[in-house]
Length: 201
Length: 380
Image 1 (cartoon, each protein chain N blue to C red):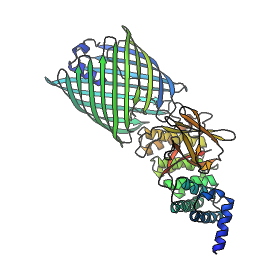
Image 2 (cartoon, chains in turn yellow, blue):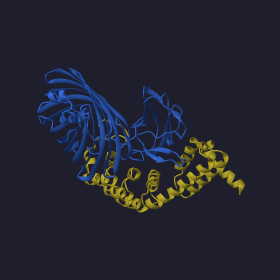
Image 3 (cartoon, rainbow over the protein chains, first blue to last red):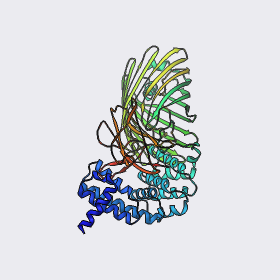
């Protein structure tokens, strides 16, 4: 059994030398979680990246293993909500939304109303909740926009809400106003640019 | 400082200044500005600001109206207007009561609109060279039609020394769920052709109104009987009631018309609409000291970090397998690097001069599972 485990660990490590940055005990435990996730059909690259992030930030091995384990569990929960056809980016964004406080049912509803990728919609949902918008208000807003809004529209919507909040508007009111007005769509240029590129007023 | 000039004039303590105040004064100011809102690129802007005011001949009251049209180099514009007035009544030889009202509104690019209306009451205790006051105002502020109650409690004192005046005030503002306090001090010197003014302040005990130190200065040089050159610059705080976001500005303007009492520096009241505003957990607007810009190109992604005062910048993230990568210096405050990235969510941090890993503005701040924070952005 021990030999088999060591062989398995060595195999993954050989396949992914990036994990050599971890100490042997941590590496073995991370590889075990990664392998388990792979067998469950979950994307493993986010797990490897989470471990590498911990190494760069000099986190203790136990924290790295716990973080990778938690992420694997959350990816599983996101897949349950979004369905087995969800892409890796969608699952990662789904994890962010769930961790921000969005109910799993909202993720499922988003899947049913939006035909294109959910990555941006889920990310915007997570961002809104992180900005102080109550989870139910944020979910209602994104669900209202999701059927027809382009990714760029969703980004602009998020920016508008965050700006209003920074100016003192109550988060739930700012969200409601922006959804109802649709003004963010009108403010879009033909090329909205990347998500966080600085612009002039 | 404007309030001080009004108080002094209205109460008759500054007879010299009062003597030159016309009953009706109007001017129009046209200028160019360089503005930089917190978290945004600097932008040039042109402005036109008409002002008209009426004052009681013995300083018992005034009514003032003002508007500003501001056009940015992007082609967007903002419009705001306000009207306010006060009436002063003597209660005792050194005691004055003041009742005032104000109202106004602002709009940026037909998108975000603010309006407000307030009533104010103050009590002034004063002598020829000094005075103090306390007061309260109450009203409503509207953001896109949604009302919030406004309550402001304020106190202050002033000193008058020949051609110089000084002013210190403390106020506490509550606007809906937002609350903050401002401590301000200002000074004004008036020469034969030149008026210098400065104000410094700090926003403290803030919940949602931002916090920090600010200051503005201006110089008005009289060029002729009805024309003056006005130079002003500074940083001002977020005005939650009127909907202006904190920022810095430099303005050069020409003022034409009756020139009596200096009007405030033309800090643009606009709402930039195309960029996120980053706030801390308390809602305070963060400084954009270190900012990430993302440019998607056909084969790769250009990441640019603006970091004033840094000697070196490193970046790490899932696109570097979390290996620190030094960025190349583009110019004095700008570093850049090119990376290959897939669409989707990305996590990253930067560090300045080998310090701690931080989250740059331009990304969403999230807990990182390691007792720190990580910046997140999405590539479409």
